[in-house]
Length: 187
Image (cartoon, rainbow, N blue to C red; front, side):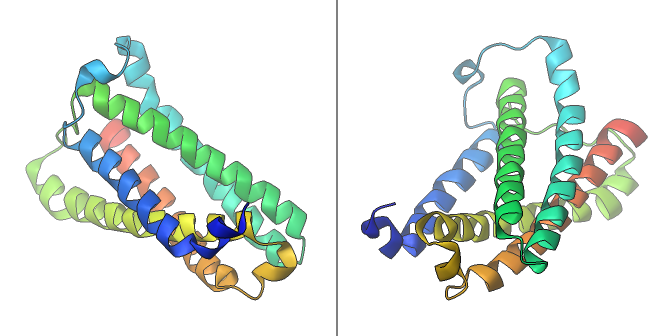
């Protein structure tokens, strides 16, 4: 990437983060009109949560393997697995946003109000906060990785921020699977 990008990693991180979070909250809040996406069939809307849960489980495996790879010094394997992890996250996000927009926003919790108030909503809130924190961290480490050679990365904040981002990303994906189980399996 050009030096100008390399010099503006924090600014690009901020811009990409704001745009991404605005898109997610716009979709979740029903601010993006349903006409913005093709009309889906009912079976597709029904299967997307399960596909996303499987994507999340796969991403947990690839992030964990990438973490192990870098700890053992295998930079090429780490890079490949992180690219796969980001691609999985991208696929998850496209499907998630498509479904949110197609149904007009978030759906209510189908279980008992007590479970919703004391289990589901607090759990969902932590999941959402972690996902929001992960976005800028992931953009930052990705932009550093794209603008620096592997030898240079060790001299940047990439290793430290990457450890934090990977940890929070793993927790967020795992919590997302629990949210899926509460919404589509238990209730």
